[in-house]
Image (tube, rainbow, N blue to C red; front, side):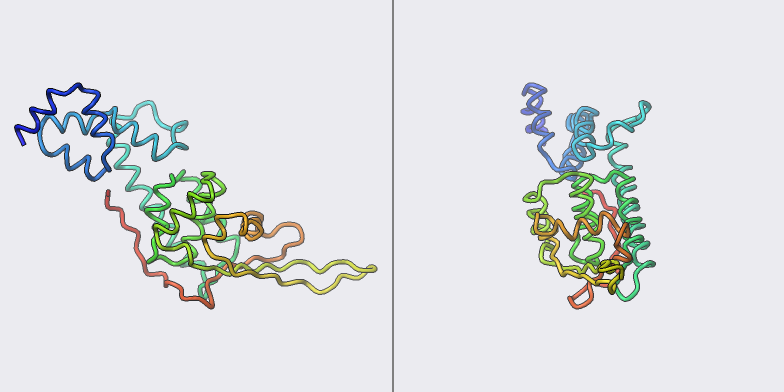
Length: 243
């Protein structure tokens, strides 16, 4: 290790920074424990500032000017978002009945994620787990599309990588009956089974629109469920381990 450190010490500093910046966080931390040279380089604010801003682009405007170290911020925020994701799971579990969820509770869970300003990596890490209930996956897909603006192709690829692209939900919505010759007809029930991958494309836009609007205007009720397909029960615990 001493010989390899001597070799890297002889290289220009910007090259060593480039090498370190290409590593995954777990590998970066491991390399920083190898020697004083690598500790100084891998734990420098320059590298961790870049990691923070790349992972959480929505966070920049609310960052405190009194941040001690960017590495500490990264670790603390990683743990905090794991806790937030766990709170969303517990909230949805408490609100669901027979694997069904009313849209008001669903949108409240969405706002918890939105208020915490999750990044795309956080959604994949904490909400795109195949061991989770599909309703949690759904909240993640919705957030990626509406708050992060992730392109459909990129989102579908992430869903496939996480092995949840073919998971389905059923969205039902009840609409007021139409007025015909001074009389209002029967209320209308509409529903659609849709995969998470379909929601990430234009094919799922009508369903996503229903979820976005909730119960407004002529829509009396919106319900989301996984009944009829294999569904994961509410037993999965979100890990907070830094990887």
